[in-house]
Image 1 (tube, one colour):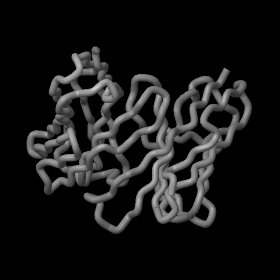
Image 2 (cartoon, one colour; image 1 turned 90 degrees about the vertical axis):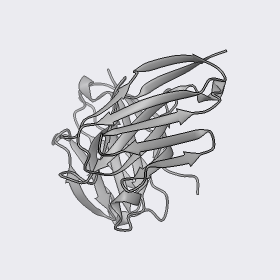
Image 3 (cartoon, rainbow over the protein chains, first blue to last red; image 1 turned 180 degrees about the horizontal axis):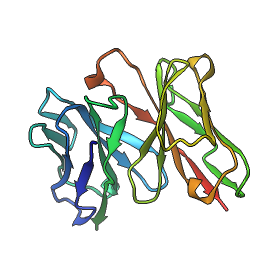
Image 4 (tube, chains in turn purple, green; image 1 turned 60 degrees about the vertical axis):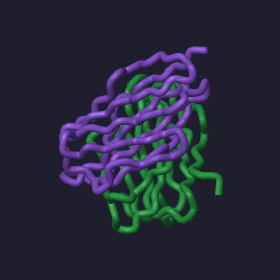
Amino acid sequence: KQEVTQIPAALSVPEGENLVLNCSFTDSAIYNLQWFRQDPGKGLTSLLLIQSSQREQTSGRLNASLDKSSGRSTLYIAASQPGDSATYLCAVISSGGSNYKLTFGKGTLLTMNP
Amino acid sequence: DTGVSQNPRHKITKRGQNVTFRCDPISEHNRLYWYRQTLGQGPEFLTYFQNEAQLEKSRLLSDRFSAERPKGSFSTLEIQRTEQGDSAMYLCASSFWRGDRGGEKLFFGSGTQLSVL
């Protein structure tokens, strides 16, 4: 059974810093990995999708890397801003078993300090 | 196109009542998913449709839950005889399935927050 873990569970950083969020998964047989953002009480916004054959994806200040063999992904946020405060979730679609659903981690709650 | 739309945004009900949620996916998307999220947890898969066919249901989906997607467009999720443990955010997502699992990107709605008193 695929399990996704995100560390840390919460992170508080000063504005302007570069930061890294971590995601690990137990089964390396995946189709893709996605990073989402969730604001309090709201739905999920897709940030980046990395296919299993790719090693990274970039969008603006965000860069996500994937090391499938070690079961790890990182989300790098450059020059953090107040609007970056949110919960960041990673999720994978596994290529074995139930390959139609996303398995999510519990998320990292990011709080920006002024 | 305004994305995935879910109604209502919030629903408060008494234990034992029936509730129904609606999801309108992105118009050209052929797959539609339902997830449930409780506080401090990531979303958990409930069920999904490809066009109008419901292809899989999670063990989380007891027989009090039923989902439909008539004509492969909007979907409804009904919970009968609600229990306090049903309180959660119910999220809908849609995607355009081209046969390439690696490239399937899900777009989520804002969710329906259910509170069972």
